[in-house]
Length: 262
Ligand SMILES: NC(=O)c1ccc[n+]([C@@H]2O[C@H](COP(=O)([O-])OP(=O)(O)OC[C@H]3O[C@@H](n4cnc5c(N)ncnc54)[C@H](OP(=O)(O)O)[C@@H]3O)[C@@H](O)[C@H]2O)c1
Image (tube, rainbow, N blue to C red; front, side):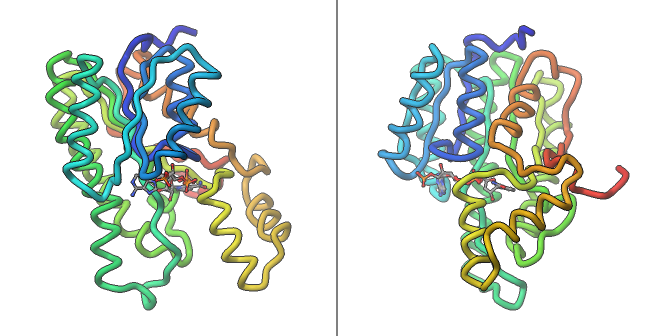
């Protein structure tokens, strides 16, 4: 199936590993030129070489910390200067740490607000002039299944990601007339270093790794933990030309784990 995005310029934030890297690889597979960033240049080099070994895609990398406004803006502008546009923007960042409300701290709330929410605001602000010029754009935010159903002891994620959802729906209304469609994807458990860190916390608290995985898997209707490419497939479809009549959605990708009817 031709997704109609060959040669589009895709920017994926926080993409040296895990879900971001899988999204970049999937978009590269569809013929997009892909720009990826993260904080660590060695991680980025490895991700770039994985993409260029697996696909014929052109790539661009830059060290960016998504907590820094100037670095975000500079990255987007550098991509546009190199390739002439920014067509597809995938917003992603490292996940907030495990904490209950009573363990939460003012400075951590502000830190994760910057990383989880303001990074999206800043990347969108920097990208929309380029998308508007082409009357075509796709913005996809990687959030979490916590926006459908709060996850125990993830108070920062449960709270701050809701602002991303509200932002995306508002943006879909504001930007729809310019051919720019906006979505959130809401991943459940996907096997990445990020998920591994949560498993390690549980093991340190006395649980067995296999018991943790079994408890999660038994509750997922499709009976498996996701792979990063499961989420990447949804992102790629939303980024495609085929998804032109779809905007403002928040799509759970979690094997049916959420039990709500709508
Ligand atoms: N995996 C899951 O099951 C799952 C489920 C729900 C939600 N999520 C959310 O999805 C997002 C990605 O998760 P993941 O599992 O793929 O995480 P991961 O395996 O830890 O990968 C995170 C990626 O983000 C980069 N990164 C982290 N902090 C950054 C920053 N401040 N600036 C720029 N890049 C940064 C990391 O690279 P560097 O270290 O090189 O910077 C790495 O490439 C997180 O927000 C997570 O909470 C994940």
